Image (cartoon, rainbow, N blue to C red):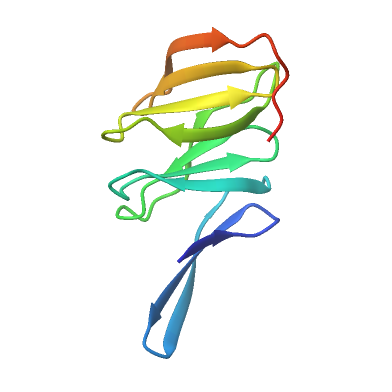
Amino acid sequence: LYFSAQEGILFFYHIKDLQYEMKICADILQPISSLIFSPDYNILLLVTDQGTVYTYKPAHSGEAVKLLDACSSCFLAADFLTPGNKYCVSVTNSGEVQVWFLEDGTCLSKLNLDIEVHV
């Protein structure tokens, strides 16, 4: 079970029978607004309240890596494009939808909806 705290900490609870173990996986120093797993559960996207998107690979137990940084407008949400886990899509509060390559954060495509978006 993965969950985040208001302080920007990603926690993992390993639950087996009536026993559990808690582990701190990453601390990104920004409140996390959503967690999204890739379809194969190899990558976890972390979207912050400030609009930054991080990737975390549970199998590698490393740090969360900043993928996308909010510039002029905040990322409200992000999700994986399926099938696979090579690409993600994001939307900003200004209505810009973008497709990203997850390996290096390259923006591959964008579309402006010309409308303010709220989640």
